[in-house]
Length: 68
Image 1 (cartoon, one colour):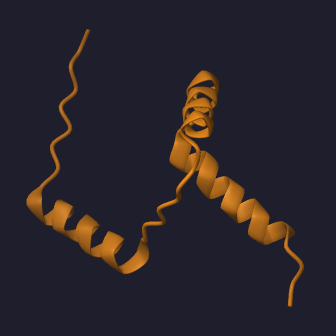
Image 2: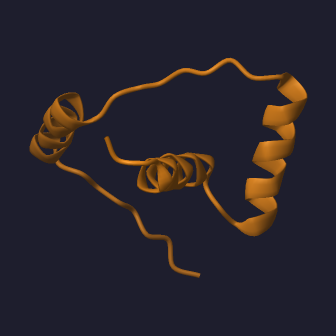
């Protein structure tokens, strides 16, 4: 088995942080603990990342919403 070490330069880290600051945002939601546990388990069972599923749900919701 070969171990792969991912080394990211400081300049790349800085560039990534700058891009994130300019283009990304956090949204915190308050949900029932059981709902969150079940959702995380369902994502894991399907091999999906929680953030990916939530982002796709947001994108689909916008796409399916009537235009103004």
